Length: 128
Image 1 (cartoon, rainbow, N blue to C red):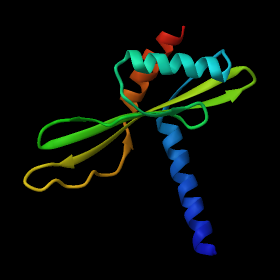
Image 2: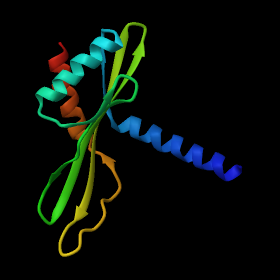
Image 3: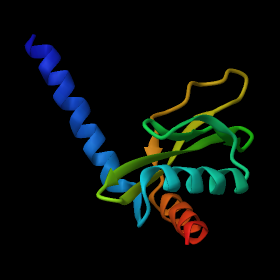
Image 4: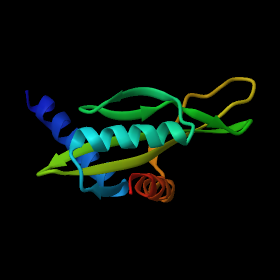
């Protein structure tokens, strides 16, 4: 029982640190309108969608770049509704691996803060 509580607390702490690294923007519209606008902007940018819903957010498919040293990146966008305003949390997630004769597994997923900020600015321009 105590181990389970410790694991839940550990996961909560990881979630808080991710939230601090992600870019956020506030849109003065209800959740439904903001979700539809952001989804359209993500499609216009050429991302392939893995999953999308108002409740769970938007997750794009992994885009792999590089030959031997590969980088996989995807977007995770979450929505928080608050009194007619919607906060949009944008996180550009990246992971790395080495691919030669034997492909190594992907490393830990990390937020690329600079790419998250750039993507949030593009989305903000499209929402205005």
